[in-house]
Image (cartoon, rainbow, N blue to C red; front, side):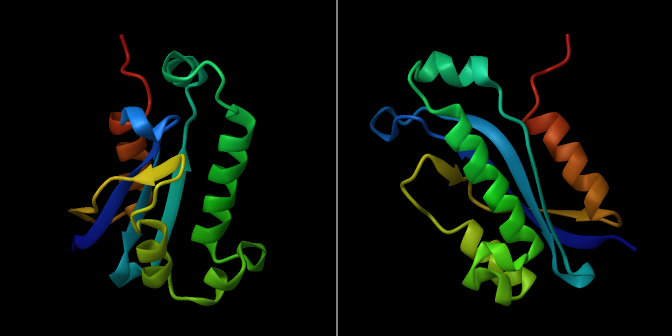
Length: 129
């Protein structure tokens, strides 16, 4: 039986004043299954087109920390002591940093891990030719 899940895209916004972004990942939260996961893909060439001076290594480090936050690892700090739902809300809260999220969307799945991979493939990875 499918379960409702929520997802949000992770966006790299190298220069907030320009409002341009590149999708660099996706978050998936499925409350009935207690699932919270993230997958990322950083396309350096696309990002450098928006900002040739972007510190891509810093972006990657911040995305890695976001993954640690999803997992609830103590290394993430106080957010690690919250529920998966609270972490999803914290991760998707509006912010004006280089990493921002889309509004949350919903779907149905019986396998949130597969949904996460599908969303990464269709919304983040470069289209296949």
